[in-house]
Length: 149
Image (cartoon, rainbow, N blue to C red; front, side, top):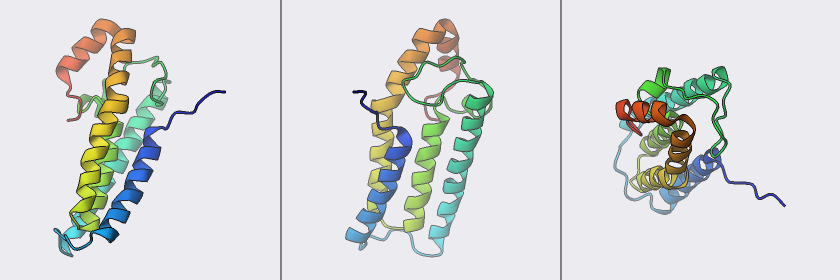
């Protein structure tokens, strides 16, 4: 029996639910008043855009977007010139946007935990695989572009 791995979008969805739950359980620590909370729409929209653009780049290069599957192309243009992991960056931006829109302190802890979890569970392994697959091209790319931003 093949065990299905939990993919990053599931972690994103669970994180959003957890942020909402923490906000309602600990809503007393409001740190961003209305109307300033509306500025959360900016990182939210930016995160969605980064994810859509990165996904399109994966499709255009005809390579996988799924973690732990072997890549057939090393994408270094577009949003990949800014971040080696734009999809994870996009997810974090989405969570930051939601945390700002919510306006309380507790959701920001979820954002931090999500970023660390993505690094530990996915990014490190993916980057090892990219090094094994693309060798020196990966090393050169890694010298020029940071992991997050």
